[in-house]
Image 1 (spheres, rainbow, N blue to C red):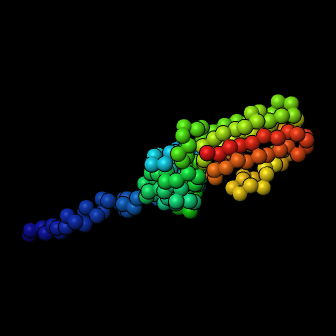
Image 2: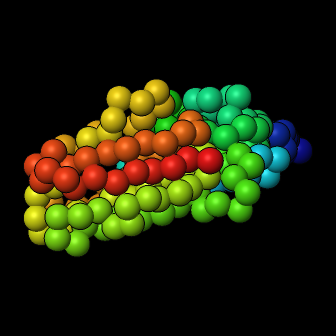
Image 3: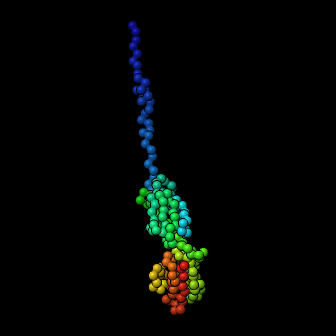
Amino acid sequence: MSTRHALIPLAVVALASCGGGDTGTAPTAAPVASVSLNIAAAQLGVGQTMQLNATPLTGTGTVTTGTATWSSSATSIASVSSTGLVAGLAAGQAMITATIAGKSASATFTVAGSGGGLPLAAEVTMPGNTFSPFLTTIAVGGTVTFRFGSVDHNVIFANVAGKPADIQIIRNANIARTFNTRGLYPYDCTIHPGMSAQVEVK
């Protein structure tokens, strides 16, 4: 009498040996909690460019994935490409913003016009009850930093078109103001009569 042996298909054996296994689904990227830029503030001349890079971060500060969308608050002053290349177009100031998954970060770009070699930044100190120097000259789009010491002062600008915001009474602080329009900007400390000075923007 002959004995018959059942044949088990190889495919069934292969499936039995898999035991479920990996479904092949890729891990989900951690959500974006914040965006970091390689530049916080910068100065450009008209016609110059600078590359901004945006990095998406998780809540613990580790790098995750995401593509930035770029925008400029003043496209006539500074433009930004889809890859974050910023170009200076005209004198003034613009905020360049990168947005990734609803989270944003911005950098301030000051674009200088034809200032004839004038500085884009200057400082005013307050020795005693005086402003030093009395006359500060900067290029259009430049910034003046007022350095306040241990005595209370303020900076109140004359009512001139294009003037920046006044600085109220303060001490032991450094406060900057940007001048985007050519002209002469007188200012006073109203706490101390006769404490006056000027910013000239060319």
